[in-house]
Image 1: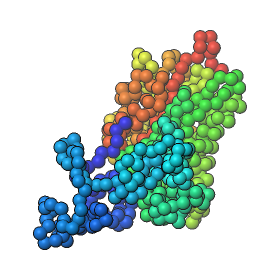
Image 2: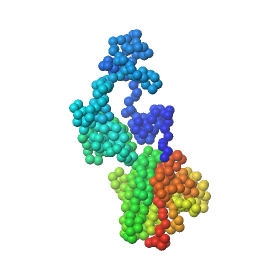
Image 3: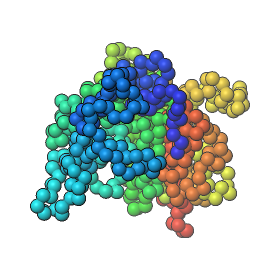
Image 4: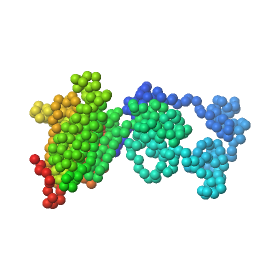
Length: 497
């Protein structure tokens, strides 16, 4: 997957490493306050050598210059050996270094002390159990209580790196002196930058002011029969998309697989909350209905209604778009939704808005197809015969949606459709952050890896990478749901009517 390009000439944000322009006071990507970054000092630091200070050249004796020999009065150790370039080794002794070595023990006073005696032998050094394992802390984004807490070879989710759980004192200002046994208040989070301050409700560290990466910037999930990936993209400051993937058992014991993708409406308030609430509510409704034996198409219709109610509830909640005037629905939280269910040889899709579902056969012998119709200005122009598709989607108004979930929606009209494919394939469920770069079904089929049915997570990653390579102008979310034909003679428990 491609990564966000970085400029080698411009300074970068210490929080997200985005290039900065001259005179910037805040990072345009993450909002980091650049005034808290101390300027680089102009003077040269004093280096402590053998207890004496070696200062900048102008502070030396009159006859001493940067290229001169040793400063008078200082006993320099004898240099022995050279490095790989033939340069004499630096005259630095072990006793000149302060601190701990990587094992947690104090650095020895003589080179010979590095030959450690066996554990339990006289003179053996024992690591203090309270010492912090900074290598583990740096790699995982978490505090480590000791060597037992680090599991070699264990993988840590990216969301853990970006939003570390706090395990040190909130009042500490230096992670080297913080008490590793102290804990933050319940629900508190530790700053990923200074690893000492508590993160406030606005997402900034109370100690260093560092803006914290959001957990939803990049999310991946795989459940074997379905996988999904969501990414913030390269231009937006947060990810306003959300997804849910799951599976359920039908009353006859056969499996049903579900994928739901939602895209927050950026012009509305709290679009990220709207998409998350809709995806979670629709997923729960679908699972409950399918397990009861409700037909998948009816289950999808009910799930979209439940998702709409969840988004509507945000408008009247604290911080909602209608809290100051309950009679005014303007700019309430809103999102689009698209979902797919594969059950007993039946493929069901449902949607409101301009998020889409595509069908792509495994063998590519049959034609791919788009399974949804956008609720958008462009789609209305094409349906009315006023423009062809090329003209409509080239217009600046093309992506203005005419249907969405939210308290200010004109009316709720869930669209559902069911299909019985005659061959195996995959369903691609996505937001416009992907289909903007693969709009036609043929284009989507070319971007999808040939082994998508066997490796759905890899396929979703490739599709997200395709959008990022194309510019990543929007949040990108895609779910890949393989469809396999039922065994010969098994048939479907549902009709496609």
